Length: 187
Length: 191
Image 1 (cartoon, each protein chain N blue to C red):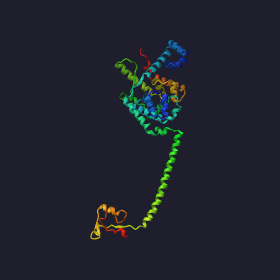
Image 2: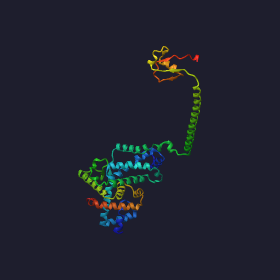
Image 3: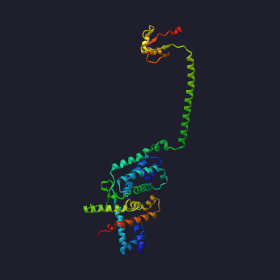
Image 4: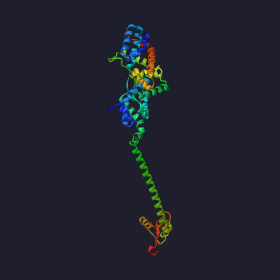
C-alpha cells in the first residue's frame, strides 16, 4: 500500500473503523514509514486531546430551574393541548359536543318563548289594573302639611304598610305626614 | 420512570407531559455540553438548552416520523447554536475569564493528580484547542465537536445534519487537518 493510500485511511484507522485486514495493512506500513507514522501520531494525539475535553456542568439547582423554565414555556403555555378533552379526538367526543350544542339551543329558545308569553300576560294585567280605583297618598314637604288638622304622623313602618298598593305622588322621603285616607268601604 | 426513549417519545406525542419532562431530564446535559463546546459561553448554552426543548415541543408532530430522538435533538440544538454563532460572532469569547463560568472546559488527561506545572500546561492546552476550534467554520467545528468531544458516530451526525455520511467524513477530515496545522508542535508527543 502506498503512503497516499495509507494517509487516506489514517483517520478511520485512528477511529477504529477499518476492517481487521485493512487495519493490519496500515499497521505494518506505519512500522516501516516514519512520515506516515508522524502523521498518524499527530492525528492520534489530536483525537486524544479532543476526547479528553470535558464540560464541567452547572450545579443541580441550575438543572432544576432550567427544567422548570422549559416546562413553563411548553406545557404551562399549552394547557389546552394536555386537557383530557383535547387529547380525546374520538368520534364519540364529536357526537357529545353536537348533542350539547342542540340542548343549549333548545334551552335558549325555551327561555325566550317563556319570557315573551309572561310579558304578554303581564301586559294584560297592567291594562286591567289601570281601570281599578286606588287610594292616592299625597306627599308634600313637612312645612306645607304641618298645620293641617286632617294630617296624622305615622312611623316609617306604618308609612310603608300604608303605601302598599297605593300610588305615590311626590318624591320619596318627603313623607312626614299623610292625609287620612277615606275608608275603602265607602268607595 | 424506566421507560425507553422510544416509549417516552410515543407518550409525549400522545400528550403525556410527564414523558416530555423525563425527556428533558435525560437529554438536557448532552445538549448543554454540545452547546457549550460550540459557543464557549454559559449564557448562550443555557439559551440553546431552553430553546431546543421548546422547539422540540412545538414540533412534536414531526417526531412521529423521526427514527432517532437524539439526532432530532442534536439537529435542532446544533442549528440553533450555529445561528447564534453567526449572529454574535463569538471570536473573543476565549478572552473572557471563563474560569468564573459554570461550564468551564476541563481536560482530564490522566486520572493521577497533576502537578501545578502540568495543570498550568493543561489549562493552556485547553485554551489552545478552544482557540483552534474557534477558527473553524461553524459546520466543521460542529462536526469535530460532535464526533471527537461528544462522541457521536458519523452516521448519527449525518442524520442530525441530514446529509450523506461522506459529507461528515469530509468535514471531519478538513476540520482535523486544520486543527493539526493550528496546534502544530502541541501534537508532538514528548519523549
